[in-house]
Image: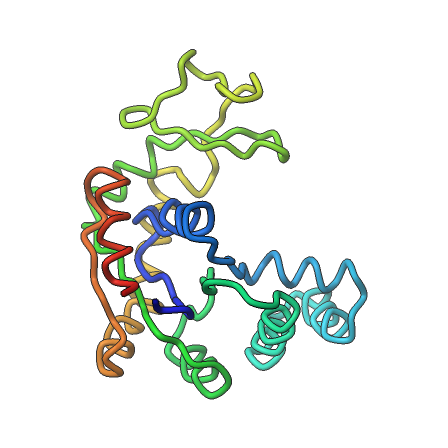
Amino acid sequence: MKSMIVLLGPPGAGKGTQGEKLETELGYVRLSTGDMLREAVRNGTELGKKAKTYMDAGGLVPNEVIINLMKEKIQSLGKVPGIIFDGFPRTVEQAEALDSELNIDLALNFDVADEVLVSRLTQRRSCPNPSCNAVYHLTNNPPKKEGVCDKCGSELYQRDDDKEETVKKRLDTYHKNTEPLIGYYEKAGKLVTICGIGDIDGIFSKVKEALQ
């Protein structure tokens, strides 16, 4: 089974949902760049201190620091079925840097048309409770009571980055910066593209096939 996986696809394509299923059903560990940086800074590790100097100055944390954080985290995990890279790489340059240090087995690309994504994201509603973070969809997965979280009873809201104008900007950024990764991993023979439209479990069965 493939053990080092990069999830690709535009915002709203279902990467997060499928990543969660890989975690809960198959025991994969998801490495989120943002989470790892915050944890390292909070714990005051050497890499965390280095990252904090860039973050405090409002700059981007260098690829080298992020990749070393990932390696450190992977070593601390012990034996796990696999690793999912979440939020990294976002550019071909980052993918090349990652490849020089770690062996990526598979790049899973979730393919969804822009017009579907705009509809999907603008109908998304989120729970503001940090210990809940539930996400709903007005059409596909509405809350039982309109505007109220099923799990904790908080009032749902629309995130700023789920508003139409912002969604379109996010998609433009994806096409410009991140979409070239599809060609990069295809050339390396590591790409599998899955249609991200349809039943979540049906899509997950295709993900499991790609892992073999």
